[in-house]
Image 1 (tube, rainbow, N blue to C red):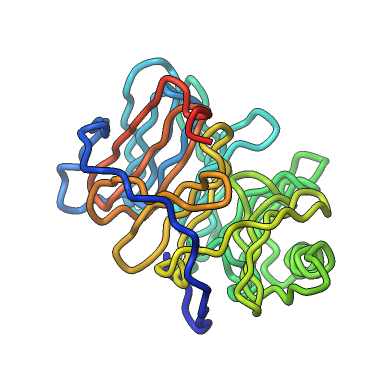
Image 2: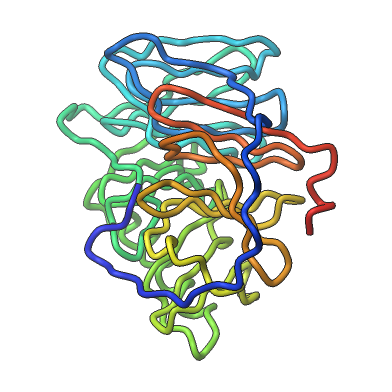
Length: 293
């Protein structure tokens, strides 16, 4: 999802040469129903992944491809927190997903409420965010919690909701270097205090528990940053620009990766990169992705 209301003017990056056209992407799944589309892809490893969107969840956590229908609902975000895979969706719906399939754990009574998928809590306090801090599974104006007592609660106006969002905003500002005034934040999947922060002076940093590591100047198209993932051996990988380009960090430069058309969600494991468009999900794997760094 592209940011709205905030314009970033970034420096031209030291950009490595783009990959030549490749057939490395493998089609994993394609939506055929006209009333169904894909919103997000998440992967634990090469063979275990989850795809969520309107009316269905598709996963391979059991070792085989499985489709679960969720009529009238949709998934906005998927992440793993404390060894459990969670999905957050429309109307405050939350699923726990394991080898037995998705289990609907909670849903707001007011079905007119939708939680948008926008991981930037600095500009969208109604964002959907899955994190493992204090039992919070979704952050934002319509947050859903799982307190330590095990009871699910929907507290849209509760101070705990505002505190969780404010804590993350405060952390991004406090942990950023002195020369950085944060204007945008992208949390890594399932991580409350790990992510990428963009600064008003056009610089970018990776924050991990108050440790800030500078990134090379972002590619020109990344003034519209849709997603940032930490791909382990893949390094920091970005999905950005109106043309949905994928960039991977290569030392002090960025390399544009060949990618399928109209990608709007990515996920990275040790040696595999997953990408999803509205109707298709792909995977590309390398024997040793770390060799590119």
